Image 1 (cartoon, rainbow, N blue to C red):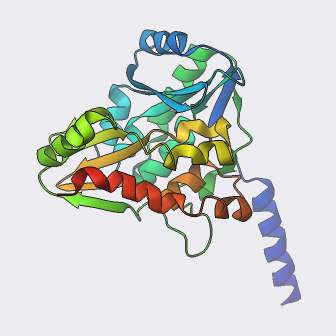
Image 2 (cartoon, helix red, strand yellow):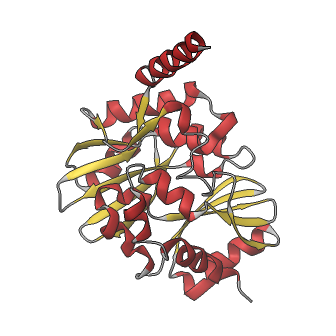
Length: 268
């Protein structure tokens, strides 16, 4: 029995030492937002929006045919876009790592060939990039949750039900389009919507780290008669994998506020 226990401990130590960590973001030297957009378009990407995610910083949301094809698969719409955070204050850029978020949002449908190609294109487009200190073990990404009792990817926030076209129209029309940023059609029954949050709600980024401001804007998935969003406790923890429990408690009211903000367009 003692030998078996020693072998198990040794194997656990070996697997831990050999676990591959994947950075959530790719960090590079400063490039202004207009130049970033031009570089993305020259590389074959479609820029969907440039969003003021924090003071003196913008998040540029972009996509291409391969990402849209992956996002059109049932339940995978959030994988259809990538983001670049341009920090005019700290003079840096931070790009969502397609491998990290691809594994998280595609789950069992993850195709490494597709997302490795996206990574190669991004590296070619922006040159020298380094992985962020925010990272997770590769094997933990798809099944990630912050801690016991916290949500997983599939535990989405349900916002509304109805015809896809009606749901999309409500998001676009609410407050005369004040919060609507873009819509991306992925199929006849699937759309991804970029949506702004209330000014007070989105202050959490400054509190827990502007370096990861690519977490915004938030997205709404409209698919097969349902409007949903990523459960905020899941999405914020995934986007801030170094977040401690103490830091999480400082934004304890934010997940509820996010769901409330995203639900408002669908209220009668």
